[in-house]
Length: 351
Ligand SMILES: Cc1cc2nc3c(=O)[nH]c(=O)nc-3n(C[C@H](O)[C@H](O)[C@H](O)COP(=O)(O)O)c2cc1C
Image (cartoon, rainbow, N blue to C red):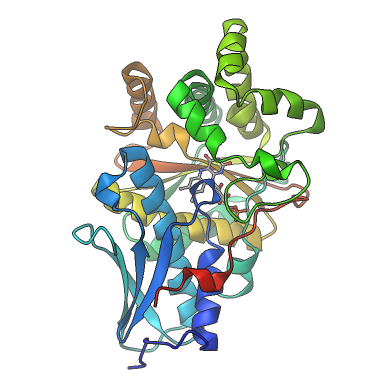
């Protein structure tokens, strides 16, 4: 078996690191580092998973799942089969990608698909819609991630039900001071409206139209937001954030997983990476929404009990038997003018 204790300047390690840093991550924050040992790659965290509030912990696990899957996919192009394992007993190094013996076929997502994957938050995604065979290809792509499934919610009643959940969750982000703070903390208003961010979310990447920008910028001030909520501003922003874009899109899906909530979040992150990269590679635009599924989970941070119960009841109908972790919007759209970047790949290496 090959030795995975690669030197920092080994082109194979640089190739793996490059795709790993391109993985999607909550708020474009990156808290992991890669460590190499003879028989495994490991993902280490600066913060202790056990100390994180529930929603942050799950966002971190989904993000780690996406990084882990990127590494597994790219490793196949090097002839290596990596098996990702989540070890919550080791909260500082929770992910281990063990090298397994035997030959492996290169994954079609290796290379360009991983590098080109990105968020597109344009308001309007257009058709043509995918046919059943194309939808099946995306769903079947999750076969390599045990316990995960892609739910399509395009039928009228399902879409109506999902839009109601998205609207309720996104509205809460503008109505609840703790969630509002978390939402706007991630936005890099210091960058203006023309450049991307290597860390955090550039305003220009958020799909906010020029005429909406003054209102969106002002909303970051909780005092003003609270005042404007008296005339329903939170409801308007909640509808604009997810309901309207998902209403206009040809497809809305959810990724759900079975098992414990932590293992499910990690597996859902792996599945997310696969669907997203495959969709982009097939010319589809993708944007994702985490609030509606994550606010429904028991222990969700700072979420009102009545909202949580409403979300739980809705998801029980839409995703019976598996816990949803992410909503995806799919369709066709112009490429985003501004995309968020990443810190240098070398800074993700733990020596
Ligand atoms: C766990 C997780 C949660 C996310 N939640 C949202 C979300 O609620 N809304 C959104 O617009 N993007 C969301 N994203 C997308 C990230 O913001 C995006 O991946 C990140 O900014 C990097 O940009 P890129 O996808 O263009 O590479 C999420 C991504 C992950 C992995």
